Amino acid sequence: MKVGLFVPCYINAVYPQVGVASYKLLKSLGVDVDYPLDQTCCGQPMANAGFEDESVKLAGRFDRLFEKYDYIVGPSASCVAFVRDNYGRLLEKEEHRCQSEGKIYDICEFVHDMIRPASLQASFPHKVSIQNSCHGVRLLHLSSPSELNVPYYNKLRDLLSLVKDIEIVEPERPDECCGFGGMFAVEEHAVAGQMGRDKVKRHIDTGAEYIAGADSSCLMHQSGIIAREKWPIKTIHVVEILASGL
Image 1 (cartoon, rainbow, N blue to C red):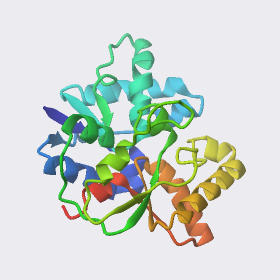
Image 2: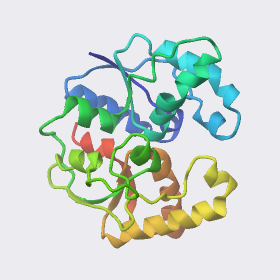
Image 3: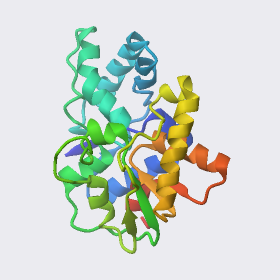
Image 4: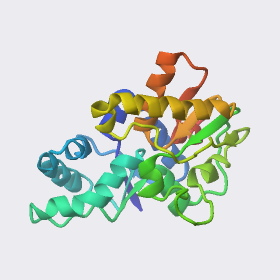
């Protein structure tokens, strides 16, 4: 099983430690993982902004870059969801059969569903509040959506529970949007900002030291609010916790 590590452009530029943690975690779990060079944006920002045609060439490039791998794994629920749900349709315009859509996974999804570790080496002696992102919940099914009458499950909680010394909580309204939403936070910044403040306050109310999630974009939005308001909480990607000590 050969895995290609997909590190989204904003993680590479702003949160490179998340990409490093992803590589270390997969290696520690015995995965034959490779990081293909010359990765570029997956095209999601262009499509979200209404310029979908400009993402077609990026989709084709991505598909060719990762074609030799059995699986593609990335630390971003939203970018993974964009590839999985849109590449097949986008590449029809190029008369190209997409290979990526059926083999790409968010890293938390991949570790939980495919690797299924019984234990981890990690230790994180802190209280964390889980950030359930919209794409992760409703497109990748990382946790149960509150609007559906289904039994509770949360893959992020399952993985974090393997970490020694950690305390895990969830906020009130656990899967309500934090307000980021890609272009939404730019075009409707006042609404997005208020949604973000409400979300962070609910995380703070849990008594947590950290907000932990699988989408750095949502964490970035909340981190900006925390810095502006000088609130006593931090953000961290779940994979950084899972890889702690490696």
